[in-house]
Amino acid sequence: MTGLLAVAASVYGFKMADAATYPNPGVVTGSTFAHDPTMVKRPAGGYLLAYTAPGIGLKTSTDRTRFTDAGKAFPNGTPWADPYTNGDTNLWAPDISYHGGKYLMYYSASSFGSSKSAIFLAGSTTGAAGTWTDYGKVVESTTTSGYNAIDPNLTVTPSGDWYLSFGSFWSGIKMIKLNPSTGKRADSTIHNIAERLVNSKSVEAPHIYYRGGYYYLFVAFDFCCKGASSTYRTMVGRSKSITGPYVDRAGTAMTAGGGTEILASHDAVHGPGHPAVFADGAQDVLVYHYYTAAGDARLGINLLRWDSAAWPVVY
Image (tube, rainbow, N blue to C red; front, side, top):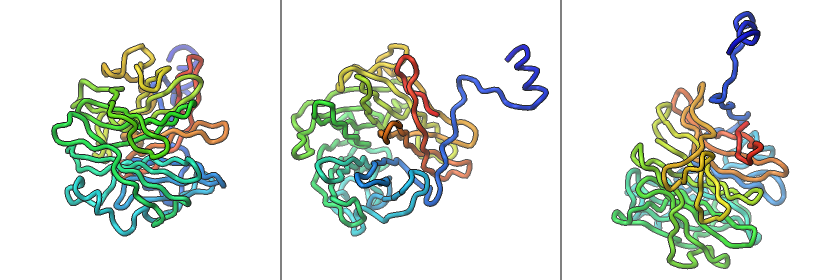
């Protein structure tokens, strides 16, 4: 900060922004708690949000600002997931979308720090609490798999191919091809699309968004679930092919630890991460969770714009 700008800042007391300044979350009111959120625009209007909770928590909104609790996807429990949760009733990181006249939800069952995990698929014609039918297991990992079957995200390519990305820590982010008629695995191939080599190999929560000929892989680096001490931050890379290779803005492969930061802790926003992106008309919407100074998890919503090199910028 130099010259007249520095003088003005000193005299009038305003804070100059710099390249590391990130926007605060947009206004969210009503029921604002969320952890690992995912959101879809409903065909008839309004929004449906799902998040990590016992039985998978649901919220609805008419305007993408005020949210109302809408019960649980599975209010009567999920005994089929119990072998993976070590007694915890929480089901993790749902991924919700709408295809073929119904809502689909991939979700994971695990326990903290374990790679004995599984991803399941469920469906509902309305998305309402208690109307979800579980369709069974899609992929699982064991304590010796070398990867972790959590944090699923479904991507449907422009040509109609279905892929599921998932994973965290261990050997990183994986991807499998799905059969669109069943939502289950199409073959036994597992693609490696991102890996972290430092900070306990902390990369997780993949979300792939297609725009303008690129597949953008959004992930979270570093550590979640520590309240205001969380260091989660949102990173991105891109590829012309859904199976990779994904590279960051500097050209570093995401399988070699690459990733371009687009959102991190700032001001009273701690650990913004577990990103999900969806198109809402002409807007590209980024959904995530963050922690307050008191350690409470909150729903974060911002918009994305795209710079001259077609990289996303949060605003």
